[in-house]
Each structure stands twice: as C-alpha cells, then as structure tokens.
Image (tube, rainbow, N blue to C red):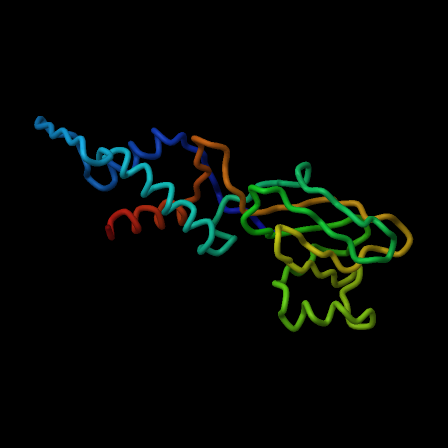
Length: 186
C-alpha cells in the first residue's frame, strides 16, 4: 500500500483566505464595484477549483491526499478464479491501490490497451495472486486479474485520488504549491 502524503483539510473560505495572504492580495481602503462580470473573489474561487482538479489529475499520486473508497466500490462477477470487475464510485478520479483477499500484494494498476493489459487476455500470462493486475477500463471500471481460485473475490482495500465533498479541500504541500503556481501565472 502506498505511503500517503501528509494531508490537511481546509474549507473553501479558509483556502481562499490562505491563498490570498500567500499571493499578497490584502484588502485595501478603496473599493470597486462591477456588475458586468463576477467579482474578483468569485473569479478566484473558480480558478482555485480549476487548479485543484488539475492538480489531482496531473500530480504524482505520492504527492496527493488519498481517499479510502472501499465501502463505495462495487465488486461484480464474483466467480472464483475468474477476472472480477470493480465498479468505481463516481467521485474516483484515479485508482492508486487495490487489494483483494488472497492476493500477496496490491495489484499493479495499468491502463487498457497497454502491453501488460493485453497480456491479461491470455490465462497463461495474466496476473495471479502473487502478481495481481488491475486494468483501468472506460466508464469507471477496473478489471481485476486474477482472484484466488478457491474463494469468491472479496475487496479488501481501494485507495484512490477522489473528488472531495463540496466545500472541502483535502490538501498536501505539493498540491497547494500547484494551486499557488497556477494562480500566480494568471
């Protein structure tokens, strides 16, 4: 299981206030009102949300907060010895680690169409309990190769990079730095 980065959670208002301080966007005595577009604060909120999601997609998983999605995932096709399909929750952006009962270690997660993924079509070259493989399929699914022959598949753990609940921002220092650099470059 990967070692998660140190993370902390801020509300949207706490994050905006922190970023404004770090970018030296302190309030002044003057005020300007506009009615033809969103205000500066609303614009910054949208830019922060955009930079946050960009960071979740582009940064290395070791630099991001991980979420345990085991209770939200659904395991289908639970036949002993056959590949199983794991339906990922809608808020899952990238699976990072998956483990099933009977596996010796976490599965190697690969994208569909890669050489390792294509090797899973052959029962003699596919992953087993010692070297399990999970193939990321379209439509939010993982195909898990291969559960133990003697027991029905059972999901032990699924760690992923996931969208947070509305109004909360789980952060790490690299993710906060990514957001700051995106805001400073605009």
